[in-house]
Image (cartoon, one colour):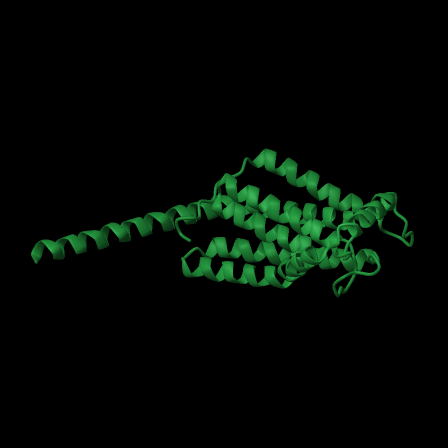
Length: 235
């Protein structure tokens, strides 16, 4: 794991703009759902997406999406916990704190918006659902975890995997009739904005911590190699 981690600093101005736009999308969609009107301007788009997703049902995809249903919430809580523990074991407490705070903040904001907006879910969901619909908790939790991983790994392929994971969960929630299209868009935008903003606030100290840990590991490895060489020379 140590060799995989290579967190990098993001451009402050560019990332702030991206995060602000994403947050604005989530807030605007949520604002349109305020009040007693349950027929927002984008309901037609949501209904069309819901109908299209219903045409894709097949036994194989049902099984795949049931796995994603578990992974998207319960699984992500477990993954976040394991990631934080692994980082602590590898003496990266600040990276562990960033991971834990990002996941917890996204979860709390998601639940807060659900209870504030009270958007009803689609009918006839394939899986059991609770609370309200906007934003999608599965998508926000998945987005938080995969973006944290992409930031910690710091390589292009990790970002591609993260984007793929987010899109897969967004499609899955529609396939399972658990959320409207705008729910998953709002969840992805909210979580992405939160993770990016938290990273900007902590990236300097996190990048430095990882660099120090890598140097310490390299030094220990050199010392161990010298000791082994000295023993071989003696014998």
